[in-house]
Image 1 (cartoon, rainbow, N blue to C red):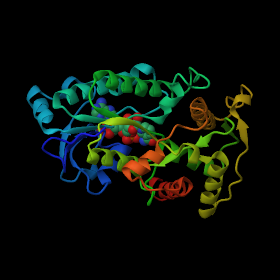
Image 2 (image 1 turned 30 degrees about the vertical axis):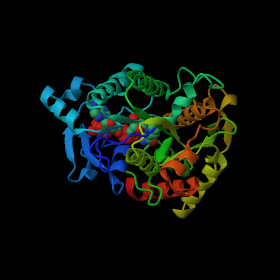
Image 3 (image 1 turned 60 degrees about the vertical axis):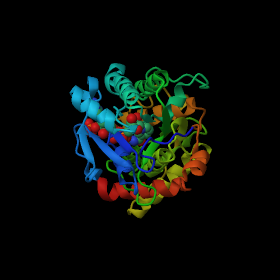
Length: 342
Ligand SMILES: NC(=O)c1ccc[n+]([C@@H]2O[C@H](COP(=O)([O-])OP(=O)(O)OC[C@H]3O[C@@H](n4cnc5c(N)ncnc54)[C@H](OP(=O)(O)O)[C@@H]3O)[C@@H](O)[C@H]2O)c1
């Protein structure tokens, strides 16, 4: 599964799409990275440093470049990390298509012309739509259209025949040693709400794991794959059976609250399958929205077998991913978010 990069074994030129995103900025912070061409879109990328930047729109043919600029990029690039995407949940299916599916098709076309390997950042949540899912994911699940678009993007890459790997991270949290993240995400938002005692209850399916992975573990794995010249493989960037259970997650939240001078009595956990039909509907608007997300994410995990598939042992062995305790990393991530994300 490995192939050296012609003429540039030591330092391939890597086009990074989605550079301003959580994953992109984490990748750019890693030491001793490759030579990046940083694809910007609408947001600045502070970590880009003196790397060459090029403005690309994934929704436009040739990424919106003229033929000459596109051909020059083709000639320059050895490897693509494709991390750009529409990541918000709860949108209509047609909103995801231009970026997540058609954008990936354009990346495959580009890679074919450039004879480049693609490292695609998908999502572990595709497990919920697998044929082997123990129960089907509900049609109204808030993540469903997003997940479908990522699964379709994986198919586009597979069918294209270009050399590629697929990395499937679960929800990412801050850096494993500092808790740093470029922006707050759903985990930090929901955790803050929970740690302030705002949840009347937590809807969850029995036995599900709370699987959060520090973002730098994903970055290290992708960059090491490039260093080794890997051009095939599917990697679940999750903790799987090592992931904390819900009780441990609530314990970390209570400790976090205590560290900030608040007392949190962990909310009762209610079996999401046995919720009264109006239990969520009858709450205040924000509570309703957050409880629905908790229930739907729990459903995604339940449809993935309760425990997400994982490649963590292989990522540690092949790519030297450090052994990081997820509850410690989660705690650091909460601290960072409380101090810096407001
Ligand atoms: N973060 C997570 O917890 C997580 C978990 C699992 C999987 N993933 C996957 O990892 C990938 C990266 O996630 P992320 O959290 O870094 O996402 P993010 O923070 O939402 O960033 C999305 C990136 O896509 C770019 N983008 C959006 N529309 C574009 C367009 N039309 N043309 C070019 N670029 C465009 C954005 O650029 P601008 O900001 O400049 O518009 C931004 O850089 C995603 O594909 C996601 O599915 C993320």
